[in-house]
Image (cartoon, rainbow, N blue to C red; front, side, top):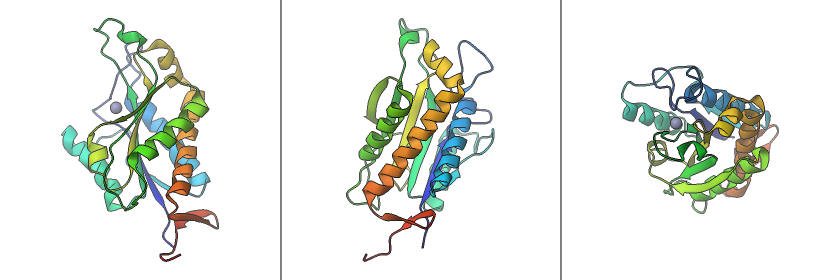
Length: 216
Ligand code: ZN
């Protein structure tokens, strides 16, 4: 029986810090998202859902941002992942008036043809977003369709979670807290488990989520 595989992508890394805190110049998106991604990987495995990180340390794949993003999607494609989730931290340009007030969480998706005929990327985003809100109580800015590289170039349902705004003081405190990171991870994981159930192509066999036998 082929096990399900979820590829968990921590955005940025290495020379690309992602968004940078305006309040603490040692606090970067790349570190927060790696921590959350590692928790997601662990909690998925605890549930019998096979998981793999695109990066497990502070490095990047390619000096070209385009190629770096392509490699993340390719890791999921090469490994025949069942689902892909990319984890990020948002930021708003503080030179705009009112920018520091912008806060909350968003989940991005892009509907495309995948092997699951009736299950859309949009539905994946909706389910996971609802679970994150349930766990963290963070303000929710909605699910949004966007042609982001990792969403376009993956062959399986994929979402990108913008967990919170590093440029907002309250969200900044959340991103620094163990509690928020953990709850975000647990929300993502519970959402993914619901998604596997809803797709219906999988079953829990022994300790592991596996593909159902064809024709069952
Ligand atoms: Zn990012």
